[in-house]
Amino acid sequence: MDGRRGFLALLVAALLVGFLSVIFTLVWVLHYREGLGWDGKGPEFNWHPVLAVTGFIFIQGIAIIVYRLPWTWKCSKLLMKSIHAGLNFVAAILAIISLVAVFDFHNTLNIPNMYSLHSWIGLTAVILYVLQLLLGFFIFLLPWAPPSLRAFLMPIHVYSGLLIFGTVIATALMGVTEKLLFVLKKPGYDTFPPEGVFANTLGLLILVFGALVFWIVTRPQWKRPQEPASVRLQPNGGTPEGVEGPMAINFDNVDKSESELNNEAAARKRNVALDESGQRSTMAH
Image (tube, rainbow, N blue to C red; front, side, top):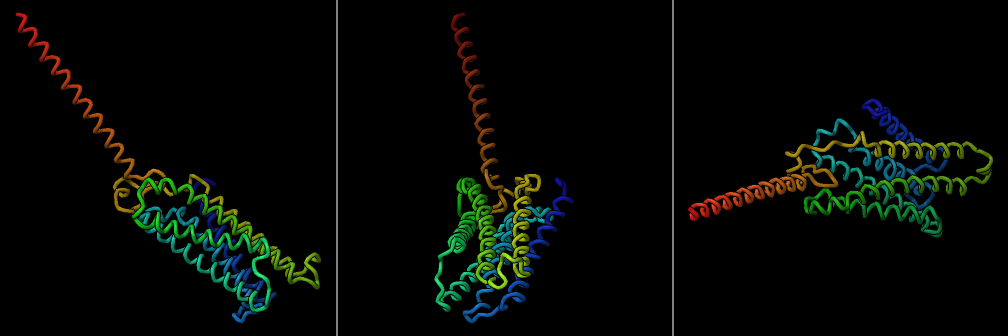
């Protein structure tokens, strides 16, 4: 599975499972629940799982693996950064709207807010995601941050992105279970009703999608290759994260120039020594 065929197979599988997760969420709220609306009642709440799965899971997952697409490796790093940021921005907007739907639903029906573990972790994930988006925009997309700062923050940016994505997957699974426990009374959740089995299948699809994204993004053989030095020298033109290309090139030049200077200095010393010895020899005669 290390070649391009393996990558394409996993990519197609991830897109298919992610798309099915969105479809299953829509079927769940349209067929088993009250549908979609914005009236402060059940249909408004249903926007929460639809937008969360569509944006916070599916689109965020695509944003994570967009750098791994082989046919984009010839595109500039700046273009890919912009696509990555744009997808994350859309995901953040949908996640925020999904939170608004929940709070409006709770406030309309006088239901307490922020009492469950699902709500605690979910709100934390949204806040961290927005901060991650802002950090990425100002540090990695705009050409203001020095290369040393980018190199220092890149591992943190990558780790926190995967951490947030994994946290969102776990939060979605908790949310599905919590909702089924609330709404399935007769017949109960423990009697394997059709809605319970269907929503559990949705949870499995979300979990598999997350696993595929994690596998794709953690394979070093599918990492975007470094760009040529001529491209890396351009402003914000796609310097490899970690040690920036211009920094490495400048350090090499510095090493070469210092070596040349040292050689020249040594040659001068030898010439001076020869001249002095020659003069002493002449004076002696």
